[in-house]
Length: 495
Image 1 (cartoon, one colour):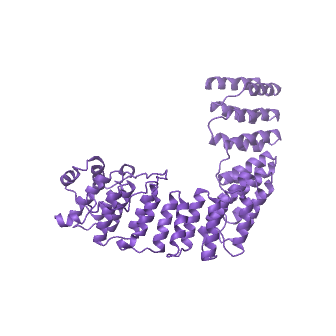
Image 2: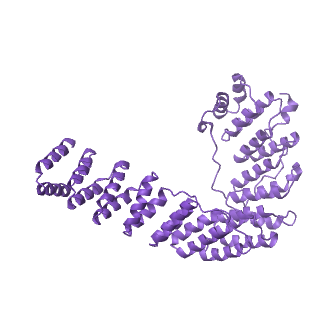
Image 3: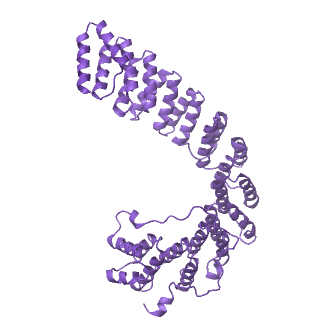
């Protein structure tokens, strides 16, 4: 590569030692606790051999000698290979830059814009801001700068808590030939909000909106940031400003979603949310499915059946989407905990009718409470449906069901549940098995008791002395002591 061409790439030192664009305010301290986590080529399966070899060189070779090592490989690179290596070399910025320069000679100095943006990004993410701006100036000379470049700059400053520097980068965009428009502004707001400083984004919008009019996306970004920070007061203020600035818009679902989701975290809770939801729905504006899921989960936590019913009625009556399995599960669980299993069963039927398939959680929650409420006919129907749909009852539910069915004189269902448990679980079966054997003896079902006792013995499940005593009494009563002795011999041989 000739010297003229080399100067168009990244210089080791900034050509302007007096520049202050990227200098942090001395009073400004990094605020973000979420530092970047870099991808490694070691985590990527089936990398092409050349790409893997180049990644190994970048990650293991000092930057002072890497160009010589690369020359010795005789590898020919393409733009795609360069991009892939750079993506996997964020943790080694010095060597990655040297690789970038080295590969330029093979590409006739024509790196892709994406490769350049990767360089800007990994330099910024490693807080090498002088070098980052050198790269940006080189990109400007090559005519390769775009909003994506500055989006990376905003993100790099924000992730290291340097919000003011991100804002100053936005302010100089046009000096680099990039438009300072609403798309760029929203990119900046998003970068700031992602790092947990939504208030800074809100404050900057107050300043900049006199020359760049915010749009629905601007407020959706701010409201999502405030939601992530649990800032209820800020969310109310920003929402009111949004309505005043751009009015009501049924398409602005993300903003309504975040606003109502934030209110759930406030002191007003579900009741304030319901009032605000009515205000929105009166204007034919609705949140998205995220809010409804969160609202139902909140009602479940507080056992607020009435609040959940109001949310549910609003959802199924007005919004253009249908509840999913998770949402049905929340409602079914809530009704079960409120001892309203009849309503829970209705929801299960409605769920199937609406084309939403129950899952193992749906069945297990409902089965648990039907057993608990001694609604055994309904529980038996549900259990058979579970088996038909190839779902397995939880071990705790199996134990409770066997105990209840035996206690209420329904040995057939007790046996069905035991079979399910015996086939699907391998530990902690003794208590349930002994309940079954003991109960079958009490109901004079000696052949069945022997059958399942033998099954327990074969599987190494311990029969208690109480069960053995009960079996012996039953055999003696039936005049079949020899059969009991044979059972004991089988037990001894299996021990």
